[in-house]
Image (cartoon, rainbow, N blue to C red; front, side):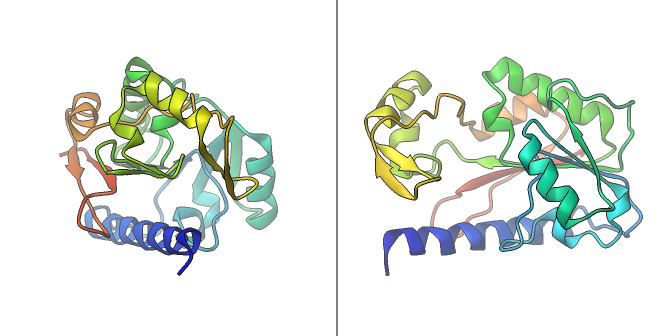
Length: 215
């Protein structure tokens, strides 16, 4: 089986597992007000946009207008907004659930990640946040083994030498992954002190970390 095909199958299975954990730990009645941070249309893995029946209860935010346009076209009832995850323009506990899949590793350094965590905990009554596990021996953005075990600056330099271009679907030099700041379970616990950190795995090692709160 080609490496890319295997990777896509593992990635899809990982997302399905995260959705199973959402159902287990944060069961939804159907009338919840939901905030989806970094929202995207993803029919293949069926994330929260595809699973919520009452779309008008969902507010989808992203910094990229293209993603918001795609959401609005696919699901006209959803509220879309361009907003920064570290400065959410919502009142305290405005949402029954704040959901975010693989966004917190893109907001900046650990101080920025803590600001996002504080905002999530401020506007949400409950939250379900996922991010790749820094200590997993294969990095999912660059698609290279062990590179995430390097200090972030060294990882970014190595990715420029050789990494995976997701748009062109091939490996090449010059890839810029300087926005990726992977987190460990202990860092997530520091950012979300009143939450539980889950470590789901598809292979023999947890590929993803999931924050569920409050506890």
